[in-house]
Amino acid sequence: MRSDLRDRRITLWISVFVVSVFVLRHLQDGIYRILPKYGYGANAGPIWSATQDAEVIRSLKLNTSRIEYRRYCSRARPNKDTKRQPLIGLSWPLLRDTQANQIAAEQLEHDGFNRACQQGQILNVPLDRPNALIDTGRLMLGAATSIKRIKQSLPEMARWLANTNTNLVVVLRDKNPKTTDLQVVMDLAEELKIDVTLVSDPSMTGEAESNFGLATYLHKSLSENTQWVGIIDDDTFFPSLPRLLASLTPYDPSLPWYIGGLSERRLSTSREGFKAWGGAGIFLSRPLLTTLAENHRECLPMAKQWGDALWRDCVFKVTTPTVHLTRLPGLNQLDMFGNMAGWYESSPNPLLSIHHWKSWHQFPIPLAHLVTDVAGVDSFLQRYSYIDNVVFTNGYSIVQYPGGLPDMNLVEGTMHPYPGAKMPGAGGEFKDSLGRLRPALEEGRQKISWTFVTAVTADNGCVRQFYVKGASAGQSDVDSVIEVDWCRS
Image (cartoon, rainbow, N blue to C red; front, side, top):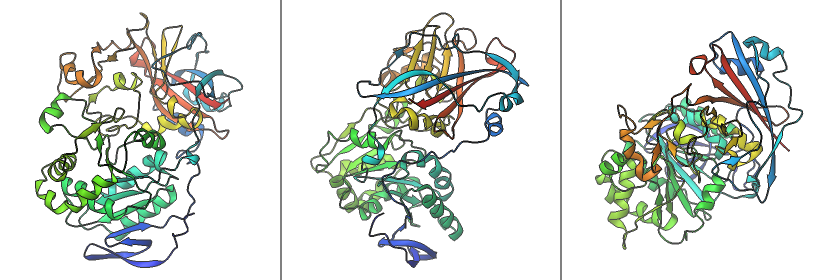
């Protein structure tokens, strides 16, 4: 536990008004941080513990009274010579190798549904360095959002942020935050073991103003060890914070750096210009942050609609020589709509960030990410092909291709760049980011998919994933469930 963190009660003043009394540590004027009552460096436990089987069944939202049920057991064996690959070919079938039982849905909880796998196929996975041995204190993060949204987002952020030395500075857009609401957020952060600094400033309630206002408060919150700061959205998800920090290693943090990723759409870049998109993550070295903070007032009048544009415009205005954007592969803004299977099933690599997963599209990334607790960060969205024309994208889908595998080197054009866009014609919007797309296949005929719905961590530490194919999606008149269990070998 950090020696400088001691409980003491103070009256919390945020900007020019009194909020209430909390257990906080006063850092500098205008910035207050909850006092963590926990140690740092240990592996974060899963946010979702194992549930009763009946609850799992309900979460699958099955629509037929009888279901087809299969179970597949995998044992992850860490291996120092194994690397993530675009597609790993396996010499056995998946669907032909598992028994398909048609049973009543309620039978699952009484029919061996919760029994641990006794054996399973051994799969080598890349050897991960334990997160407990990696100090992420060199990185500080900032987000501008509302009390309501940060409360909703903290449990999801805990998958990658809990039990780290990375502080999250949150500038609140609420004009008059309630005392009780602030207390709830601070208590939640402590419970989740997330190091949070909350800031409420009535002058920073607009989108651009609050986002760029992070420059001042991140600068005030710098520690001696801070080398990098990242500006994110409240729905930015990092599969691995240590992996993200490692990706910044080639860049000398003593020099000014402006690092990020573009939108995948030509439409966005043509309208908003060349900038780092905030949802994917904007990363600044300490010297550049200092320059921006010192020129905050000079840059603020340039604010338009979006905060990430103001970061770019200020960088261009106040740096000499001009600091240009350095693009970092793996930061994904995901400015896409509709069926996102094509992107997820392409097994993107490197995979540093994911955005819009609970807004522009809906996919339970934190639950899908649970498998990394057993099989390592490289297992997430790793693809495996089987001899029965099946491709398993770990954490997203199990897909059977009756006519044989398509060109798996190309992204399937299932998504579209903006509402109302017609594919494949609109696919040119993604040419610069995703390359040439292959045509979307007809579900139920050319492609039969079981899509990830949920996962739980069992009492024995194994992760149980559940993939579902609705009755209307294929030839069958019943819903189909495939359970994939991952245990450490």
